[in-house]
Image 1: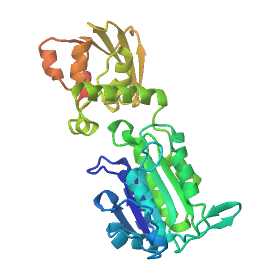
Image 2 (image 1 turned 120 degrees about the vertical axis):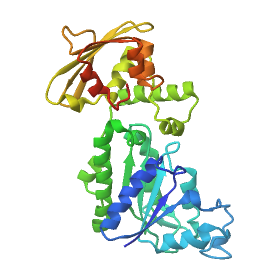
Image 3 (image 1 turned 90 degrees about the vertical axis):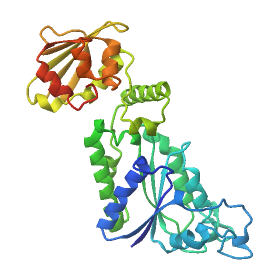
Length: 358
């Protein structure tokens, strides 16, 4: 089986989640024996369709443009058994790069009109590849793909065209972060399995699709975390790419946001089967307390105080936020007595070693 995989993402260098999902899908396809050619459309010169209809009249089946689409891509597309259209979700649809490619497949249609099941269409001039639509979105709601899905189904409504599968991954931007590694790995493994299934049976099983689309985070937590991420980017004057390159951390601005973010900076596995209570008592701009119950890798945050915590950190709120976001060194702040630790200091070192708060 010959498959053409088109990546329309403008991102590269590991930043593209479209590319991440596509790479795993392609790996599975190749595992199953398919001949897969991957093309990054950002590297190609593809001009816009100008609606001249030369491909329907003067040169039937051939576009007037002499670019990469005419010289290379259109022929490869026609010769393929399957095409994967991989796109980030832009304004609830395919991005402009992929839209231009799709529009330039017009020469594969005849200019005439036919009616089938009450719908008028242009008949195919050539046999065209079956379609797999793959897209990623930053938001966690799957219904954001509704317009794209409707487009995909309408695009393949012409007799002779076939939509094999739709692979839509919401909340994709957090997949490469360390906080949801286990779920992300399962999603990517399932995407690889989807590639194998498409080659072997021309469809994806419901069980595999359920793994691919599994929730990563609840919507409320996602919104709070993402809003703090953007606030930090704006305050520091950096783009998301620069934020990632500098290994920055979103800065909490309240007790509630601190309780949301701190668990991602704790090495909870060092506790093992024991139950450990980590208490924070804040002063300064935020005068409040909270504690974290850590056991078997799980961390539960609650407001208030615990009677006999294993470890208590007393600190001005801004000082600990500076430590948490790597603006200052936590050990140096401790030596300068900027905050106090009551309890097992060695436990604190273990919990925060290599984490986001030290």
